[in-house]
Amino acid sequence: MKNRIIAAIVSLLPAAYAGAQNPIIQTKFTADPAPMVYHDTVYLYTSHDEDNAPVGYGGFRMKDWLCYTSTDMVNWTDHGAIASLHNFRWADKAVSGWGGFDNGAWAPQVIERDGKFYLYCPLQGRGIGVLVADNPLGPFVDPLGRPLIDGDHDSIDPTVFIDGDGQAYLYWGNPNLWYVRLNKDMISYSGEMIKDSSIAKVKGQKDPFHYQEGPWAYKRNGHYYMAYASTCCPEGIGYAISESPAGPWEFRGYIMKPNGQSSGNHPGIIDYKGRSYVFGFNYQLNYKLTSEHHERRSVCVAEFQYNPDGTIPELPWWGEEGVRPAGRLDAFVTVQAETMAWGWGVRTVRDSMTGGMYVTGIDNGDYIKLRGADFGSGAGYFGARVAALSGGVIEVRMDSVSGRLAGTCRVKKGRKREWAMAGAGLTSVMGVHDLFLVFRGKAGDLFDFDWWKMERAGKVR
Ligand code: FUB
Image 1 (tube, rainbow, N blue to C red):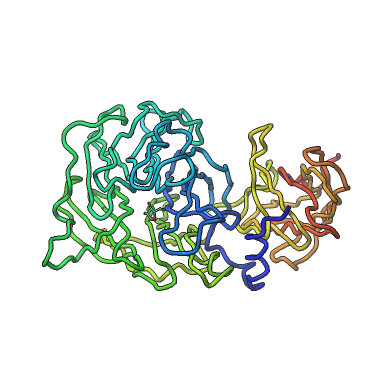
Image 2: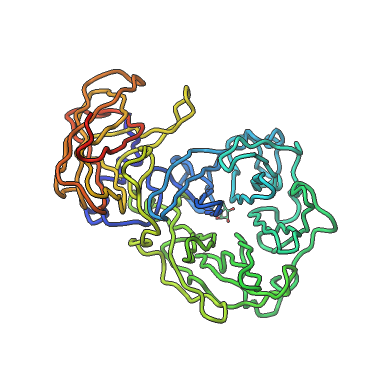
């Protein structure tokens, strides 16, 4: 059955949304972005607000952590949940109203060291745990069987970085910023947990930092940066610079001023393919659906350029236009259906039998947009792996949802999970275009969609 939340959002969004890029994920509510560049790919880890988060501020409902990847910053592939509260045996420990496997999967971050991937996860009220994997997409396991950081030290929102001398640091905290020096194994630490005194609020004194939570630590051109969610509420993104990973930190301004449209924010900052990006979130999809506040957030991204002295310019609030492509999408390789720049009305789910992701909840008029698809000197055929339900068609359109129709792929009525190929010849598809796969049919739940691929014009089939 169609996901009612997403369906409702779709019916409320104006047609102009076909050109939007922010928020970057439309098929789920995502928050607390933690991007990691590994080899040529951006791995974007996020927390996950459940659709049924209750009305009201602070009404979080969060069970697992998600991952999306991109090589062009505009088309994102959904890898689903890569870990959940069930990865931690101690998640059921009840502390101050939290506990259990159903809530408290807050802001994560992943870092690679010596070919292993360390996922630091706050379990609200219970402390910060660490999971380890051989692959950035998991499977992740808990090597400790207990929290790395206990629940008594403002223990949420971990951020991790490894300095040039190999010393790793884990920072975290709301309302104070804390840190420890991690050992080389990344799952233990040496020395005391230290509460940073430069950012700390001192009663009766001015607080230029307005530090709240969500720290994001990194080093660039010899400067140590600490970005964070600042002021409350609403939260903006502030940042501080230091000449040492242990501080003292100096407040350098806002990357983004707070905005009444969003009570929260949470930075994640990377350089990728020579450009700099800040991620955060807004409540745009929630507010398209209802005027009531639910903790249902959506990750956004903006591009920026550092000033010559290393400071960061103040950016406007998240715009709908998002960022320009940092690469092209090769239309002649297998593209997972859950790769998209914008998904209109569809959902992504994991196939319990194969473990792979696919697109479902496809109704008449829904579509998937891909930005900057490269058809080279010409594509002559579109093939799609589908499992038909009531059946329908995939219209292959260029540049807009009502743009030139290059081909129509018929998907015959069939049975759930009976995956088969469908295809269509294409006319005059060459060069670089935004590609729109528009779904049409009479009934609801037309078909499920696994992947697609184009073949070059002139290729004998
Ligand atoms: O997502 C749950 C909490 O909300 C995070 O841990 C905070 O940073 C805030 O975004």
